[in-house]
Length: 479
Image (tube, rainbow, N blue to C red; front, side, top):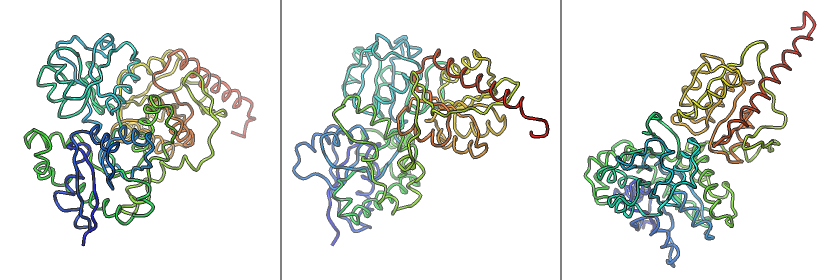
């Protein structure tokens, strides 16, 4: 007789797509499970159910902000698998006739936002790149449905939530401004990475310890659903027809915005620590670390390739002593390896054009030369091999290959490469990881130009001079 468990989810294809498929198409039953699946109208409803239910679920799906809220309330829970990267489905829509062109035009405006959700992280990361003062923006905390009503009544100038509500905002006079992965900001159109947001599969710690076989069966059912979703998207859309009030064609379009995958890797960790830092700013009494929030053991048994071990290495490495100077970080023994007698050559890699432009201007101000720019990690590797620059300035969170992976590959080409990270993901664990790899400087966004100029001049000009003086005293025949 199949084992019976209870699973909770949301009537939402971003958060609970695989759970719904595994239940409705019998994938759980194939692995000996009888699953009673309860779907709530929203994550907020699910959150409230934990407060009032005497019989919590065995597994459930949710996004990181709501998971952290449960954890902060004392529930001993862990993430056992990511489900999907849903960053592109979280979007910011402005009123077409609002007069908003650049993000600075948002100052003094009223914008709707679901606070405590991924859109808040998205908005903060965009603001870092554009040096935007968030205190000058009026935020109206409202659900997606409430935002649409306010938007229709011209009581707010922008909507910040997720699909399908953002598409509905466009139908009533809105224009997509940016999402977690794409910017339509005039003059700054293209791929970005302002959000690493994933839906998650969660359970209680006691189940991991004492009912691992049942959890493995759950994960196998979810994996089966993930494969089905990725291989037969049209058929999968038919299964979700009653979840959202939309036709099949639009459902397919919405599903295509998400990347359904069960991988604990560097991007998973970056998304975890970025969400955790923002959460702890509003809940300083919550005391837990990123490492206490997930468990990789079960997922590794499903598919060893689902868990990338290298992103966890920071926990096993002695921390490097780091100097902090106005949000610029570097190891105490940092040293740039620069050629003598010529201008340092740079490449700049960031998925936000305004950051690329600002950094290129700073390099020129200190007498450097930019020999190329890129917007993805994969492009950075090709550009590095082609130009062999003296210094690489690179972001961590980018589309395609992420910055950490690109850094590793560049250092394989040249172990002495001078790499500067310029990132809004300024978290201690992330900084320690990139310094462990061999990064020379970490510049946190938003940055202050005079401080960057001062330190770049110090490290590039002084150490370049020292290298020239060192070579000048080497006797002939010893070079």
